[in-house]
Length: 202
Image 1 (cartoon, rainbow, N blue to C red):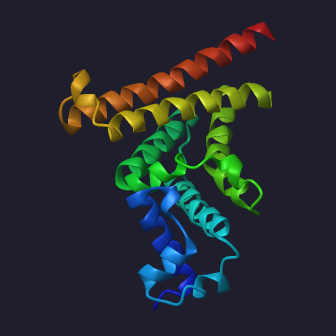
Image 2: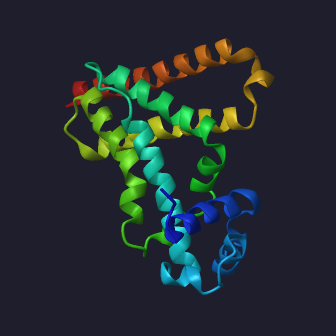
């Protein structure tokens, strides 16, 4: 089925940003590349920022689906590890989309309905699994642990994207997979150790 003009505009917006950066995006440029009148995109998007917000929101939805795609695991540490691997796969398989997520500050899109909720889906999934891993009934504590897990996996994704791993001794896919698996296990171990200290102090 042929994509609607709205969907074609979103597709083209993502292409433009991936090729030339966020500053190159405009409704006029989208119209030019789609060979439609320069007013046509305005039927679906009030402004360039509305188009930008929906395009970035679509990528957040893709990331959320990627993280949700794996089967649930009985053990939360295993599930957190699978979420980490799904995040790394998304970054590797969709490098341009992944880069765009962090190229434009989400705070500048907060006024657009639904964008923050889309951005929070992946983090909320991590938070839910981390809460089961720690068995701590303290949301602030679990949110800190989830942020730590996200930061570590985001760092791994960035190292992979910039081809740094061979420079630090991880040559070939087997070595890199082993290194990343070990890193994810250490993330889970660190969170579990912090949870034990919390339980011991309470």
